[in-house]
Image 1 (cartoon, one colour):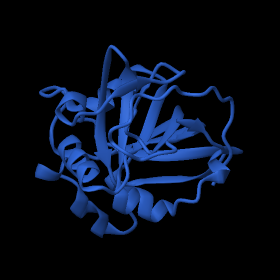
Image 2: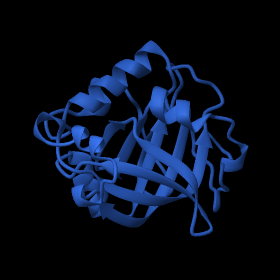
Image 3: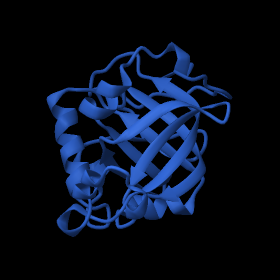
Image 4: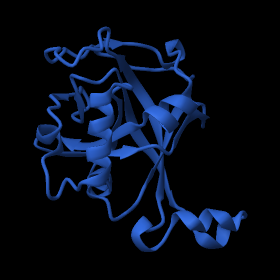
Length: 190
């Protein structure tokens, strides 16, 4: 994987997050989990490049996010195999499965102690800055309520995170061996 400034990315974030999806990864090499997310934002806030992730408190990944300062957003691409991984990681709990093993992903420890995967086409290393919870009384458009309750799950916690480092895989083949991650100190915004 090669370090790249966020400003050098050419992804359409609406497609990348909304259609490709991403894995939100938290924890350490000894205990980590990832979950699929198709809701999120990338932008500029507080004079920093940021990512915003929406995580339901009942998710195992939420527990690991709460335990540490760092979160990685991992993008696997649009292949059929990536879609199977996203589907599995979005529907199964890390409390019950070793998702990396089940999906044949190769964990790679990042310099911040978090985890990405050798198969990732893009990894955004993030540090938590702010957390809040979505509250029904603040929903201006009440149709948003349809996304909550019952089988759909609880209200999301909203994490605003500084994008500290980004890595781009130069080759997108699943057969790659784990790549060495290159040091970086700063990313810039999209």
